[in-house]
Length: 176
Image (tube, rainbow, N blue to C red; front, side, top):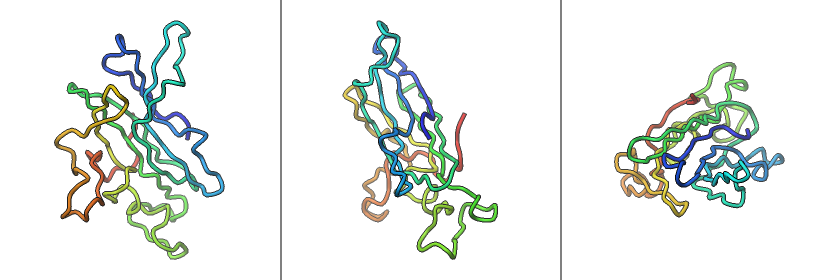
């Protein structure tokens, strides 16, 4: 966990914005074996050569399991239109599934286990196991560019059972 990715804003020279893809220590619940992974924007202070931690704007956060390791993703990149691409791993481990992961139902777990990618990369309402695409705005929010897989509002897709941030789904551990 911890820091997974760093990306400078395309206008960093004028605005000093730095984007971090990370799991904040304060958002880790060791008892429940869950955490929140997020993408935040900070402002770099050239006078101190440090990030101004009070400037944090959380753009996006999503739950992750921390019962088993691996597949966190972390890469980020910009396109020429100012859209930010965020790589998220499937948050699964094959260590509990005899070396297999993906569509792997486990008889010893009720429901869909943490070793089953149907819970994450195969789920249209989960941000793990995806390439996300958002357009960060100056106020610390984001908009959704046209051309993502879903709008998040498709009534024919289950009425809100999709996430508009998803650009690509079904990935295992995208990182650079």
